[in-house]
Image 1 (cartoon, one colour):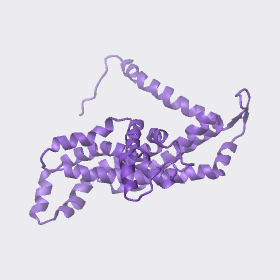
Image 2 (tube, one colour; image 1 turned 90 degrees about the vertical axis):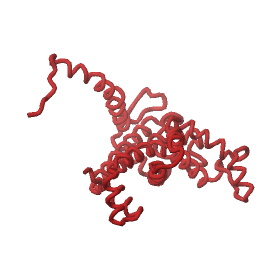
Image 3 (cartoon, one colour; image 1 turned 180 degrees about the vertical axis):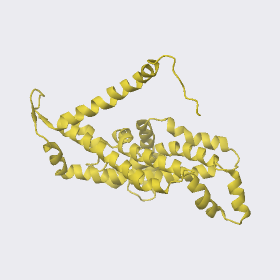
Image 4 (cartoon, helix red, strand yellow; image 1 turned 135 degrees about the horizontal axis):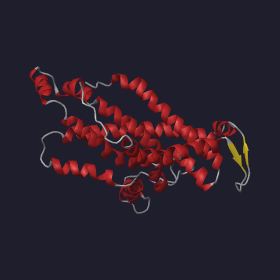
Length: 294
């Protein structure tokens, strides 16, 4: 028979839950309900009168080529960012888990970028790639590469992805390194005795054992790409040049807080929330089947 914790005061569990429930209601349930409410209305420019329009705001968005462009860009951006950040972090974690000289310094330096805010990370990369004074930008120009991310859309997107990946690699590295240290040494030694090479050991033993961590990081990286890269985009390109780096999150911000399209931005927030929920649900439905928890 298992021992279950018993509270001497029956009200104590509810008192302990009140802070978390209050935070969830204030910062999630209430804003989400307001977004849904505003998404089915149409307000005048001064916000003095509103009209119920049903799904008209959603239909207008799905017929807007600029919004559809931001939708395609967001999916491409999240896929490239997640795959790049996970791959680089896994390679660095495998290298750091080996007995090498100066491993502690190496691990510490790799963790540092996680302490930076996305906007700060963007500014650091701007110092390197600023067309007129950036060190790396000048080096590219010296070898014949015309570099100006403020005018070139692919260059701007590359720079945003680069800064976002650099910021996220540290987060992934921490989890990968911890999961690699948790792999039983006896399994690796047994595989080595059986004559398995390093690649065979990694893909047949190590990678399946760290698959729960990989799946968790995949979900977190997708969420990061859709939401937390706002600071990078705002500090670097502000969605430009043109709309080359205007993801769904940044378009929502500009429409709501720059152009004051409150109802349209509310509809965008609802669509964005549904997209992320569906995307993560698909990952749990199909990708989690390949995860080994034991």
